[in-house]
Image 1: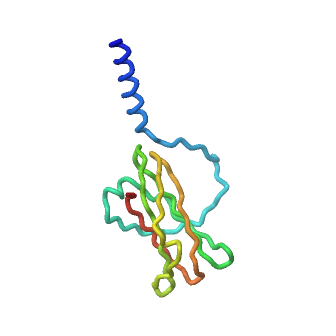
Image 2 (image 1 turned 45 degrees about the horizontal axis):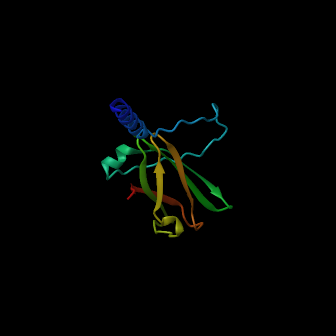
Image 3 (image 1 turned 120 degrees about the vertical axis):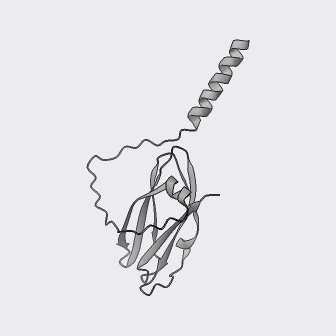
Length: 139
């Protein structure tokens, strides 16, 4: 009876420890056909902890529906554990004035350990020429 309890406790501990590892394995084309238009970006990190947890892999953009900018930012969880964040895109016109819209809502995102995922948005106005992606820790 005592050895059964010890075995159960050991098994539970092993499951708990391995359950914390949520790394994501991926498979993709060895020679991608996609040729994204990459955007040179400027990064301002005000939360060093978050900056050490979530990385920006790439930023690319295209034009959709004839005259609206679409932006895609690829984010990476730099740690082994799940990470919950919130993000939003803000658009501005050529004069630096905000061009608001539904894309400025804070959206939740959960990244599994070491997962890479893209977030994107389409400008709500053809006047939008630049964007800012803001990221905060999820609550």
